[in-house]
Image 1 (cartoon, rainbow over the protein chains, first blue to last red):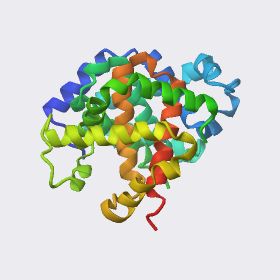
Image 2 (cartoon, rainbow over the protein chains, first blue to last red):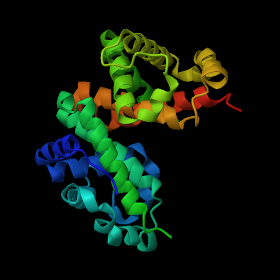
Image 3 (cartoon, chains in turn blue, yellow):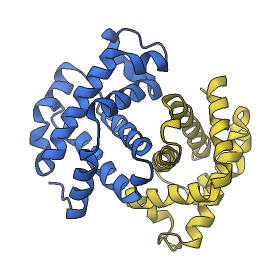
Image 4 (cartoon, one colour):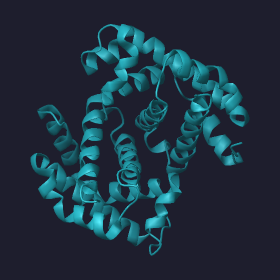
Length: 147
Length: 143
């Protein structure tokens, strides 16, 4: 069980309250596909992924990015219970989607950079540390049911 | 592999940051120590408090080395040869590339914080590749 201090919970909740889930989600997924192009292997039916501009403007990427980050919101609401929260999604990513869990770590790091670019100096070192911890435990929870 | 466009973007970022070397390097290190406390194990001899002279000095060293690497993108192995020896034989940052990846993440966060939306997906991609290449060269001689 992960322990969250009062300060960490505050840093998570206050930042999350200001996040535009649709924009940030689209940005994070888009950047994943651009910075780590091999991740495009999971999105073969998304249409045009031929350039950064195409990826960022791709409506399927945007929609899926929103879905992914919305799901992240569940983590924020269930910090004490992440493994249970992501149990079904973990099974899905293993059994149906066949996603190497390393990709969850990559997406987590990308999300951090998107948040940093968006919030600039409000994304303090303490904020980064807390959020880096959060993306790490989410990645762990998503990998938990792999077999 | 760094494309011609990547190289241009990397050099542009370094030029934009040239007046802030010490600041960015120090901030990256500070973020790394706070976010990934295991990295402090390499600096038991440092005062790691916020704003310490040692962090500022070392941050400047790291950032200057990166700026130098950015001027020698066609020849990273040679440009970083001394540092490569240092990291392999003296510092032995372990596991190779992993700990350096943590610093890479923090350096990119610093750039994102200071450049905001100018840290575009294209710049992000180019810089990630650059830091990855630097880490690879530094780990070349490990074994």
